[in-house]
Image (cartoon, rainbow, N blue to C red; front, side):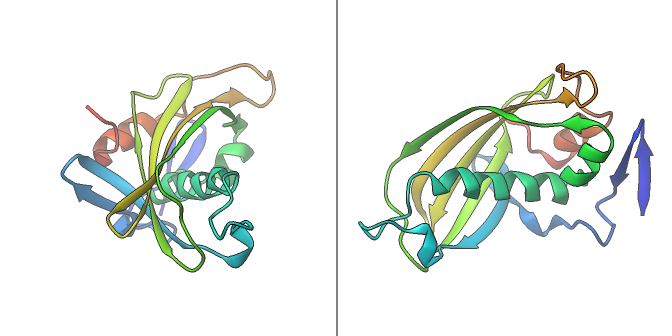
Length: 165
């Protein structure tokens, strides 16, 4: 079911386009969990996931977090809101290996303003492998200038418990 918040169509959690399956409560708070399996093409000669591959893993997790919260990237873009990455910091703790099933846990670090600040943690089972801090900026596609997040986005992040306190 589509609900309109301002100029952007927003899909409710009961819609067939999103579900609560990606959200999970942990002792440190609510997180969105995106699972992926390490492909052979993701590894390097040292039999580890190539360091640059983690940016793609975090992108996939971020896109699915927004989708599961009812904010589809493609719909944001059609509505004239872009969300480029302006900063990405990764800390590698342990390597991921071919065919491992990984969980990327994502939450919002601060109230969305013109920026969306995310913390991502990549786990294999209970082992923390990589942490990533990602900063994106909401940009008006016509002017190319930063803008506020779409109406209702911050409220939905609060409702889901994804904004760290």
